[in-house]
Image (cartoon, rainbow over all chains, first blue to last red; front, side, top):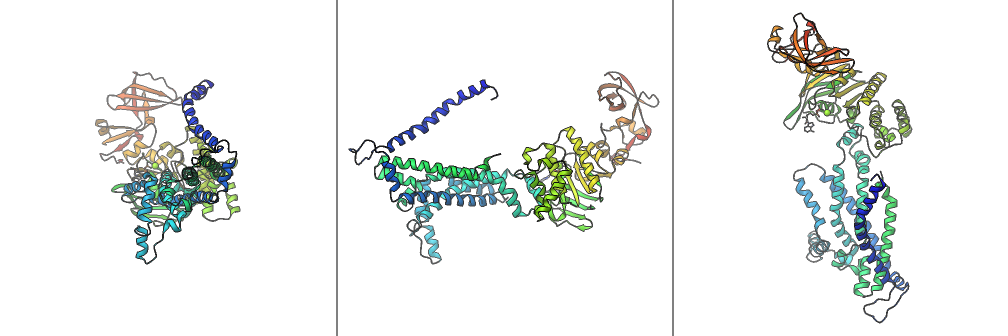
Length: 287
Length: 333
Ligand SMILES: Nc1ncnc2c1ncn2[C@@H]1O[C@H](COP(=O)(O)OP(=O)(O)O)[C@@H](O)[C@H]1O
Ligand SMILES: [Mg+2]
């Protein structure tokens, strides 16, 4: 890519992909913006025309809005903390030599291949069900009244399901990074007098800063609009996030205009979170 | 500044014996070089001394104290690794200071010692850089700095110069020797390069397949190799080996003669040959010749002499420089 000529060719060559991606992004966005300023309610087709900012106003002043924002952020935060901490521990274990390591690694990765709807159903009906779920059975064994997970701690329940799904992702990325850590670093730090804990603190953790940053950024993107787990477990009314509120306005209240406005607000929130994250941990990606 | 003793040291990896019974006394304040071909167990032996590998059997003593069961940190040795093994996310300052930090020394003392080491090694201008922003030679110096700050009992070097280019290698060689002089510390240095061994060591340990072949000063090894292996390994170009009737004339199974101990043009009791290739180095000329009595033979002549391929030669051995070996490859006296 040294000469101006070759740079021109390079631009030309990537142009089709860039144009398709750009259209892919811009068309839905422009349509959403357009709808968000319209009176567009499927139950009231007579009411049409421009709505000004009223769709935004009604979405924000909806009584579920503050809760939805809180749930969105709380889900992202708890799932990231749980999956990164758990993934780190799991990766450290899987990095040790033990018999059957290959099989165990495969098993650890498998939750990631299960569809969110399926895993949410499994958790809802087989594990967390207060009557015939496994957790209820275990609680009864030790004489505790079974917990009705989705009624009593809906947000926590969704967070547990999502953490279980994202744990393998972070474990896998951290494990790969662990394996790229030079063995001689360990020897050198042992010569320098570092014990296991100092080795972890001063050599391993800094080495993992970058992959952990990547895990956090990627998980944030996906967790901000987590939906299937909330929908399938029917906790939308108790622990719905912004995505769920958009769904509620659009497909349960049939108010396309307000749902579009909600979608745009969710985009703004996602951007705020990303800017915030990049400010805090983005410098780990440099060098 | 310590004496290190190895007693009947063995190391097996699985059922592969890598170190097969080594007894060695590494002298206080000396510069000892382990030399041998790749894979002979030099690094393993060094790591056994460092405490990075467990012994299968035998003992390691430092200053008379049995340290066989002690971890690397308690042995108070410092090691410089072939790949430098610097900590990539730490500045040069923190790299050098890391052992002191682990020893929980106070901040200002660490800073003072790091400064002093950096001055010794010409690293002062680079203290705030990361290892990734340094050249190979500078990284090497940081690795040495990390070793010297905590004033270890002895320094262990594992092929520290093999990743550097030839010019830098010569320079760093001198710097390490100077460091040895100024610190007066015990140093153990591993290399597969016999030139490095000859120039740096005051004592060379030649290893072959996990055994010590010979221990001695560079000139002892050069003048009196105890085995065929040592004779062939030490010296460049390699010693010529001749067996058969010529060797029998000397009462040996094999005789060895170094290229620099063959005289050209000597007519009495000599051999004949034809030049195949001549390498002109300016100061010396290496002549590869074919002789009906001796087979292929290399001769080193001083200066730049006329030697074109196909020319006939007369070759004579310096009688006192002929090495005689028995059928087992052991030197005869
Ligand atoms: N951790 C290990 N596991 C198994 N074999 C090893 C290990 N380390 C070294 N070896 C073997 O021991 C022999 C000597 O290795 P090494 O001491 O590194 O040789 P050198 O440094 O002389 O080149 C080699 O054959 C090598 O394959
Ligand atoms: Mg080696």
